[in-house]
Structures are given as structure tokens and as C-alpha cells.
Picture (tube, chains in turn brown, cyan):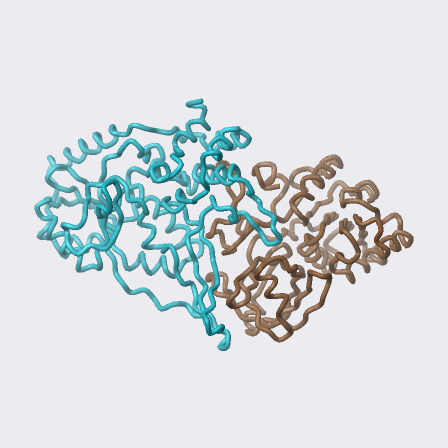
Length: 294
Length: 338
């Protein structure tokens, strides 16, 4: 059973809420219909529409990898009307779901390759799904490098995962690098004294200077605010990444999730795309051929 | 293709026959210079000699505002509204509008079948009628001046008769059930049809070369022309509302005063409005009217199923309160005019 043939949402309940930052919560939900849960198949990079009855729906990235579908996690920033309503909900409350939508990252195509994950701010959410998928299927991928840019420790998302890989990732073949903007940040300055080869002050692009040279077969996977893509791509191009080696996930206004409502349109007469249906994951080649994409 | 002849003197009977298939909706002169599709009771109300209505007939398939679901918070349920069993005869639709609805049908009947669209199309009879282009029509350029499909019957004016093309089995059954109104075409009727088509096709006064237009648009991305037109544009979104192919929609939840029940409503939307590209947190992907105007023209000039996403009806030009001429923009994009 899938509800992808209708815009009618399916009922789930919130089973856990963890505060990640002042404005971001990690919300765990569970479908009420086990049959639906069983058939909810997705890949990292896809998204769902999460809704609160009477308020509306918002597109939210899946930030986990498919394993046991009984529960799903979402990193939700209190940024708009719907996410504000989700933030005011409690464990046990109903949340409405439809999806998954979009193409997601082609994790199968990345088999045997090294992965360079670059995330900025909230863009870590879909990237965390990729990281989880790759570590769950560790033998299928080569080395995993993660570059994560944040403003300050207070704003770091998925702190447990991030600190784990920062400190002990090497044992699992995951090198996690951190960049931070707030020079005064005590915790992050503390991390510098722990491992100064893995953390630097500045924007995420500064990490390209300190990271180990990626292998030729590396795939770069980007998640971040629009401004990050432009500068990250410049760095990647300098390192010799080709346009089909770079993947990115885009954010746009989306009402339907299925290419009908038209609000996530990008491109010119030559290259119109709907981010919800044709994306949200695109290659740099797509972006080069679709003006306005990044 | 099955064709029949309908004498114009039989038009009253034809109209009455059509009433047995549902409420007849047809173009009616609304003001001195505008027509609109609306329900009609008698043939004297409608006016088949029109150029374009302001609002295209898409309004009968995707209504400006409609309930997707009703909900009840206590019962934790979304309910689909009841099925639509009202039948409708859409009489007097021009080829451009039929071609526009053919694209809407792809979006709303095939990709993600929309309950409303499916039911309304199933319950409707579409009767096309031939037309004579005015100085703003350019459907010949967009290849949408002739309807190949998407109708039950299509009436071509050939003098004192109509040559009627049958476009569906439903249309065939209408002819069969009212065979007394129709006659088989004679050689002279076919000749008259060909002549009428020649006259129609030679009546266009404006055109836009569509070949390769998509690349021209892409190349013109940074052209100053967008800013020039954005200067005039009021950002009102009228062009979207009158466009037979615009289908963007917004979705809003409305809760009743009982704070328990309410509805999720879908409504026509406009890419010319500021929040079309706005996301939570305040970032806008098309923050200026220049970007919004450019996006709209590019969307219209793009190809959908090998056809431009514009059917050349001229509405956006005719009804623009700022007198922005769509064809003129495309001619500038092509470098035909400076």
C-alpha cells in the first residue's frame, strides 16, 4: 500500500522529540498502519510532506537510511507556520505524512566509490541519511569523508553522530571535518585542541584545504544553503571533480510533491524542471544546464 | 475520422439535444468586449462568434478554489469530498483551449490522477467550434490552432452548415442518437471545409517562430529585456489566471470556528506573485519581479510533450493591465525586433 497515488496524508504518531538546537528538533514518528510502514520504501535524499491538521504541510527531508521502517526521524527547524506547529506538538500527537517523494541519491550507482559528503547548516539532514546508509552498507563504499560547516556548537545538528565520527570515525573509515564561524565558541575551540587536523575556523569551503586528497573515483554529495553550492562547486572543480561526479539536493517551495503545483519550478525554456519530481537531487551537470538551479 | 454535416438551421435542435447530456456551458457576451463561459439555458444566450473568453474553460476542470479534503481533528480523519456526478456540456470551445486542456489532462489525469479532473472529464461533453483569429491570436505559431483530440465533437463553420468532426466514441454516440440532425458530407462540404481552413490559416497577423525558441530563451537569461518589462509589470498575476495552460496551485488549510473541523483547499496560484519562490525561513528563489517575469516567459516557452507550454490564445497580452505584449517579448528574445 502506498499513498503516492493521492495527496491524502497517512496518519502517524510522534514517538520521540529530541531538542537538537534552539530551533531544531529531531522528531521520531511511527505510522499507525503497520502495512503502510512496511511498504514505505525510500532512499536518502527523498522527502515527505509532513502535515499538521488545520495548519498545513511542509516538505521535510528524510534524514535516516531505510532499515526498520517502524519509525522515521526528521530534523525539523522551526522556520515557518507548519514547522512551528510541529514544534508545538508533543509525544503521542498525530502527524500526517505523505510520500516519499523525489528521486533521492542514487546510492546503488555509488557502489565501490569513495564518498565526499559536504554539508552546511540544516543541509546536514539529507546528508545524514546518506552517511547512515553508507555506514550501514559499509562494504559497498570506499572511504567516506564528511565536511560539515556550522556557525557554532549550539547550532550543530546530530551532535552524537557528528562527534562520534569526528573522534572515532577513522576506525570505520569515516573522516569527519568540521568548520565553524564563531571564533569565540568554547566547545569548538576545545575540539581544535583535540584534533586540529580535522577542524578549522571559517566556512565549510576552508576544509578543502585541510582534508586529505580524495581519490579519483570519489563522488561528492552536497547538502546546504544555496550560497554554499556555488562556492563548494568551485573548490570541487579545482580538485578535478567532473560535473557528473557531483550531486546536490535542492530546496524549493513545494505544495504537492508530485510535479503538479508548479511552485518548485527551475530553469529556462530549455531546461524547465520541477525540483520535487525531477529532483530534489541533481548532478552538477544538471545544474550547469539549468540556469537558476544553483 | 468520422465526419458529419450539421445544418445551421438545425442548431437550435442540436442545442436542445445537447441539454440532455448535461448543463450546457457556453461562451456568452459578458461586456462589450469580453466573453465568458457560463451555464446557458437557451441558444439565444450564447454567442459562438467570439474570439476568446477572459477566463479559459479550465475553470470547469480545475476550479479556482476547491476542497481537496475535509478534516476532523477529533476523529483524526481526512475525508475526500463526495464524487461529482453533475454532467456538463462545454459547447463552443476553440482549438487553442482544447489543446490547453489536453496538457492539463496529462498533468491531472495521467501523472497523478486527480479525482476531480477525472470525474469532471468523464462527466463532460466537449464540443469545439472553429474560429477566426484576431490580431492577438498566434496559435498557428504554437501549433495549437487545430484540435486533433480532446473533444467529443468539433464544429467547423463552412457557411450555412457545420462540418462536424467526431473526436470520441461518446461523440459518435451523440451523433447516432440524434441522427436526424446530421447528414453525411458531400463533396461540396469537404471543399467548403478546405476553403474555410485556408481562409482561417491565412488570417493570422502575428507570428512567433517557435523553432529553437527554447535555446533563444536560455541564451537570453541575462538579457536586459527582462528588467525592461519587469519595470512595467504590476506583478498582479492576471496573466496566470487567464492562461489556459497555467496550472500552478497553492494549498491552504482552513479550520472552522469549532477549532475541530475544516478543509484543505487547493486554489489557482500565480508565479508572478512574490511568494511563489519563497521558502520557510524567508529565502526567496525569485525575489524580484524581473526573475518572476523571466520565469513565467521561460515556462511558457518551454516544450511539454513536444508542444510549447503556450497555446497562442493571446489572453495574457489582451488582459494585461500593464499592456505587456507576450509575443513582443518573444520576438525580442529571438532578436526579431530590438
